Amino acid sequence: MAAYAQHRGLDHLIVGEPMDLWKSNMPQEMILRSHVDWHLDPLETHSIERYLAVRDLRREAVEPLSRDFYLEYADWFRSEKGIDPLRAEVTRLDRHNGTFDARLSNGESIRAKGVVLAIGFRYFKNIPAELAALLPADSYSHTCDLVEFEQLRNKRCLIVGGRQSAFEWAALLAEHGAAAVHVSHRHPTPLFQDSEWGWINEAMDRFVDEPDWYRDLSGKEKQRVQAKFAEARIKLEPWLWPRINRDNVKLWPETLVTACSATTNGELGVQLDNGQHLTVDHVVLATGYKVNMNQVPFVAAGNISATLELDGGFPVLDNQLQSSIPGLFITSLPATQDFGPFFAFTVAVKVSAQVIGKALR
Image (cartoon, rainbow, N blue to C red; front, side):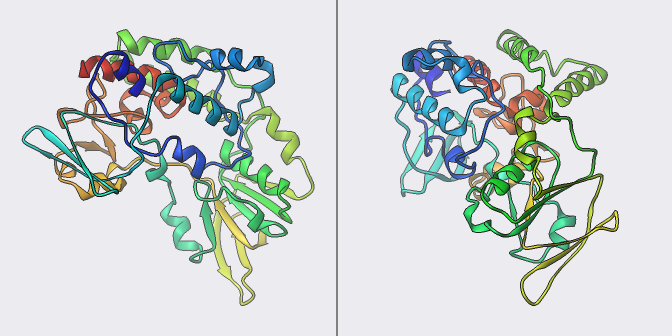
């Protein structure tokens, strides 16, 4: 967004710690599902392909992309574009007389005519109430908060969840010396197969000139697009299978946790609905993310929450990604309800930058 605003001559300021979610809430050894062509530049100049050329690397040498490689690319992108964020956090966002006032963690404040929220998913980690009620306090972590694994060396772990993050955390825990890793999920274990993502680039490109194309689909047409996306997303990357195909990793498909109790020595006794009893030391919740804008601290603290129209926790957006509050634009995961599941992935960033940039211009 900052790159596009700069290109269009829009007076702007980007606030936040660069790529902090990726640095603080994703493990160092993580492998992305993103591809080389899912880059950051709406101008198609500083792409990952260009970065590979600068470093004299071939695509085959970096795919699948690692977290560290992606962070290196993002730093290069920021440097090449001359983007210098104000490294602070917004603690409160208010709107008075058509102007926004953002209070910052460093004591400063910013007044702006327009605001773009590109906040990712950190605030939306999903801890299902039924699991929270069963599990003793301090006995579990969400994957968003468990990015260091040495603390669980020689420990027994239960992962609740059955998508990519559940199996990748299982691999990382096993590789870091966990004594045992159990994975419980409600559905059959997904296939470890390559997914077909190529069609998504074409679908995303349509948003630049036709931002309403997804919103204008009929209910059945939306379901078909969502089903096609889900078919790709629920598959597990084939490079995961050899990493979890080991004696200390056990899969429990089509199961639910029905009870959990702590013993005097700190162990957890976990009961599954198939009758299996597990003894573990820690539970990892790979239960994904669920949007609720009221959970965003600076939204809840300010006066915009009173007039921000929500639908099931998601912001209601127009075809320019503008919320019910004029001048407040929201993209990334919170935009998925109105603009489709693609907006939860990095493939959407350059498109949303252009759509919002045109509106601001």
